[in-house]
Length: 346
Length: 293
Image (cartoon, rainbow over all chains, first blue to last red; front, side, top):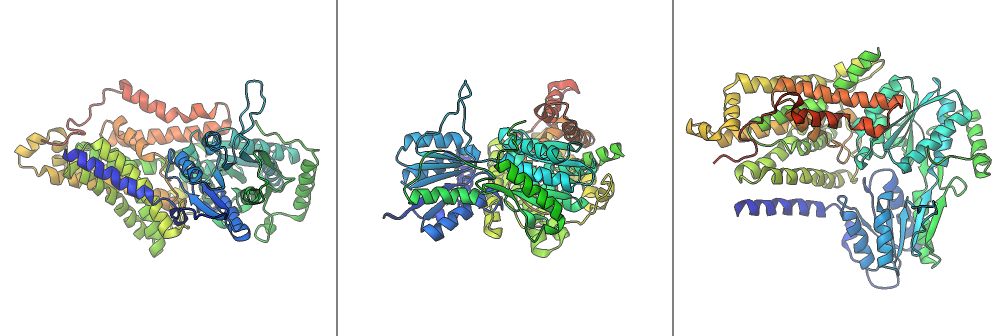
């Protein structure tokens, strides 16, 4: 009996602790009226990751300011809370529910069917295909916001190869699966476009989602690459990449950030960042909702749409010579014009 | 040069395992399952980040890391010793609490649920194989001393004798007048401090705390404890072996000859092989996991 009480007590404490893992905004139910109500559920990493989730957050904040949207954020504690977060928002009748991260794909598809009158959007939603390779479209009230990460990765790959003195560049991925392999494929193709003789050392931190939050492993991978003569590393690995930056700082080499401008993580050691316009995509989806032009389907954001790109500003100007910059802009134009085909898988 | 680099990397990866496995031996030898090493490490990493950030002094960060591990050890002790609850159940709760609580506090203190600001650590510069950087880090030396310290306590002090007695036959220990409860508390507290230091190493080496940054290292350390058959010497070797497997995995991946999923499983396969009795039968402390009558 006593054991049982302790057990219940312990679980209760855990439960209460996890309840706090949500931003204060989530506490208020949406007020009635015809104002625009938006709900966002974050991925692993959550708010303050200075990357992916913060991109969605910034897009939503902009929508709140410019469009008068009321945005509620839900930060799931762990795995199973994700679906519950989406469902909570859908059941309360917000106008648009956004899931940030590929991991919401299945939950969003199911909820979009259950709530046909609610609009859904999934950042990095992974579109499946059937046996014959035909694309399975998401439900009509679900917008898949996808990025052509391979195009941005191609550009930073070219940059890495042009800047590298050792003609050896590296890639550190988080979880080894198709979404991240897209970054790798574009990066390698970009390196080889400008420097066929360059070698790319490509490694992953693991095969489970934990591989996105293991900075210790990221640091070891990067240290061993720098040791082998690699002098620029591009990471696509969430907070594991913070370890890559730490290794760059410790050994005095260069690294390339991902998703958002990560210059501030290791000033002076970040060559550039392959940025993904998550904020713009989220803002766009909210805007369409407000203007009543929201439609389900697949939205692709590539170089042409400025959905991906690389950072070039006063911080990293010194690291990128003018001739290199010109060559990169040339490559960018050729990709947009379709003269360069960028592979999206290995 | 290559061999030295391999060795250096192995030692670097082994440090958190050595700390946590020292804690693992301590707690398991007194009869309390080391399921919570992961939680202690996470608490230690968080404590170290907060302490080092608040004072700018990594030594105070280190002490705060030990304290962070100790806090979760005391919580585990409260359930497992004071209330004699099922250790597996309490252990899981403590680990979950560590994940949730560090995240809540992270958000509360630094307004981010994912990472802390940059933390002052022991500054090392590295070139070549990185061996110099390794030797400059005082935590590395402490890591090497953790298991010898535990061996000394267990085999050379009265406290160690009592710990082993309580872990093997608590009823006999009680009849000899050993304060069983106090001995269990002491061992669990020491275990928390040791594993907490392992977490502190991670945070200070990374100059940052990130959400769930221990990435299941506590469970690898527990596997090393069992693989090493609860004997500090063998456990130290087990930690080095696991670290070497991880290093090998990093290097084989660079070669690209194997699919990474295959290379990834090497440490786990080693653990299973070890548990299957290939290296001799593993006999745990007799009273492991049971509350004394």
